[in-house]
Image 1 (cartoon, rainbow, N blue to C red):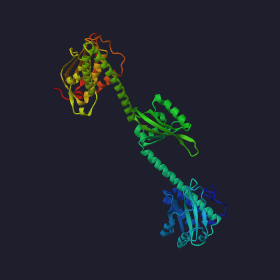
Image 2 (tube, helix red, strand yellow; image 1 turned 45 degrees about the horizontal axis):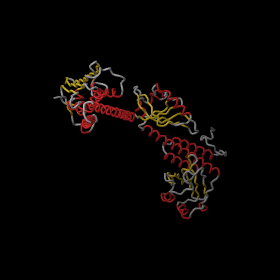
Image 3 (tube, one colour; image 1 turned 180 degrees about the horizontal axis):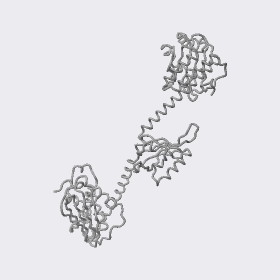
Length: 502
C-alpha cells in the first residue's frame, strides 16, 4: 500500500497539492471511523462530517430505502425538517436497481422535475445538488446527497471523490448487515432446543450450540476440534462415512433416524438433518447438522407395536379358548339346543372376563376381591355337571391399578392350560390358592388330571407378556413341571397388589 494512499482505494492520478493531501487525510479518517463504528448511526455521523470536510458543503444528507421501499432520511446536516418531510420518498432509483449511476445537478433550474418539487428545493436555498448511490452487492439501498446554495459545477475529481465516499459507506452498510445477520443467526442457533453442530469434511466438530450441550451432555470446550465419532456408537460408525461422502457431493441428508451416544454413555434416539456448508464461491467447507431428540416418539412407537402384538396375541387366545369351550361342551351335551345355550353362556362369561383385562377410567377408584376376579376368568372352564376349577385360601382385595395386570396373568395361565395343559383334557382340573404373607400374597396355580407337563418350549410373546406383567406387579414367579402337571408359584407385592386385606 502506498504511503500516499492509506485507504487502499484506487484514486485517479492527480497532483498531490496541499488540497490533495487534505482529501487523503479526510478519506483516511473516514475509513478509520467507519471501521470502528459500532452502529450505523456512528457510520452516518462519520460520513456527514467527512463529506462536509472534503467537499466544503454545509448541507448533506443520507437516505435509505425502508422495508416498504420508501427512500427516507436517516441522517442529515443543515436541512430543515419541512424540507426533509417534503422530499421523503423521492428517488431516481428503485430498491434493488443494479449498478445505479450517480447524478450531479449543477443547477436545479435545468432539472427535468415537476415545478412544485423545484419550489421546495428553492425554499431550502438549494441551487445545486448530487445523488450518489449507496449499493450492497451492486443493488441500490440508498444514497447520500450534497447541496450547494449556488450553481455548482462538479468536476471529475470531485465526482470520483464522491463515489469513493459512497463505496466506503456502502461497504460499511454491507458489513453491518452481515454482522446483524450473523448475530441473529447466532442467537437463533443458541436459543434452539435442537442440537446444532458444525463440522468440517473430516468430521471434526467446529461449532456446538447450547441445544447440543443439553442433548449430549458435552460442553463446547469438550468437543470443539474433536471428531464427531465421539457421539456415535461403535456399531454405527459406518453411518458417518456415508454421511460425509454425501456431503462432499453437495447432497443434503434429511430426517435420518438413528442412535447417538451421550457423555454419560447412554443412548438417545435422534432425527438428523445434515446440510453442506458452502462458501461464496460454491466450495463445500463442511456440514451443518441438526439433531432432534425423538426418544418420546420412539417409545410411543414401541408401545404401539407392543399393543398391536398384545392385541394379536389376545385375539388368537380368544379363538383358542372359544374352540376349547365348544369341544368341552360338545362331549357332555345331548342336543344342539343345549350345546348352543351352554356355549352362549360360556362366551358371555368369556366376554366379561376379557373386559376385566382392559383398563378403564371407572376402575381407578375401585378394588376387586381376588376370588371374584378369578371366578370371572376361570369359571367358564367349568362344566354344568362337573366342576373343574377350584379357588380357595385367603380372599385379598386387589387395588384398582393392579386389577388389569393380575386379570391378564390369570387369563394367560387359563388360556395356556386350555391349549396345552390340564384344561385341554376332559378330566383336567385347576386349583388356585391365595395365601396372605407379611410382604404380599402367595398365589399357587396347580394343574392336575391332564397329560404330564413336558416343560416350557421356546418362549413366545405370551411368555414375555407374563414376565413383564409379573415385574409390573413387583413380583416373582416359578414354574414347576411334573408328571401330575404344571405348578406355578407366584409371589406378588403387597404394596402394588393389595388395597387392604380382610
